[in-house]
Length: 293
Image (cartoon, rainbow, N blue to C red; front, side):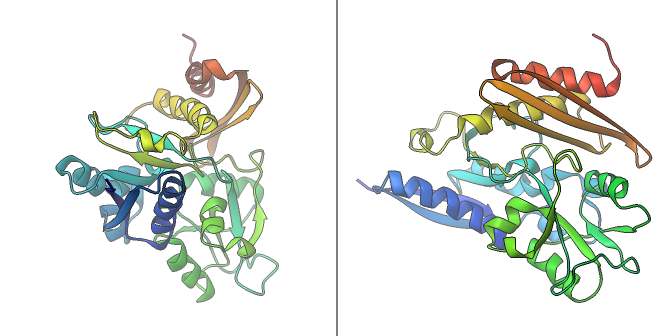
């Protein structure tokens, strides 16, 4: 008997592409399962005239999808894991994580340009990126920009910005890797926690065994450390943060940033075994906060 899984996704080109990545991977392993893509407009997609911090933060990209999970309109929801609050919603667990695409940030220039134009601002959607960019490029104005990747690129080509800072993974998934002028190493710009990972969210008690081959253990380990770092820094904290975990064999290295304001950012690094991923995240958070426990 064929089973149909209703897959919830934000209504954007990138979100749809990420949902298709999950669908294609699972369909290849389970030809008896069919999928229906359900597109949902989220508050984060609608309110584009204000910064995310001023209207509720990253959770705005998942609220409506979670409501659809609760009422049974969809069976699973697909998210960029970096957009999800580090506290799981009651009854709606993360049931699978993708293999991580590039976690790094990238600089995108207007087509045909090879240098930054100081007369125009650089577009960035986050204070995390803006603060770290300012450390690399002195004297450049950084201005907020909202909208999906294609909308931001159209603003760049219209001459509103001299460059954009975007996630490399998103550009890769949209076949726009050729637009990248520079990829920032984690020594230059620490990325957002869980950036590059696609998360599948489901309902407590439902059977998601069909996702077992899709789920990536390395992503689980690394994101566990990264999200533990963010959680330890405190719920509701709006100070810019960044964290990146790298797994080499059984050794996990974690780099983190905590910014009190645009002029005061604290960086730290810690290493340990992968089995201590959550504790490493906590320890690094306490390190950048200067707390001894």
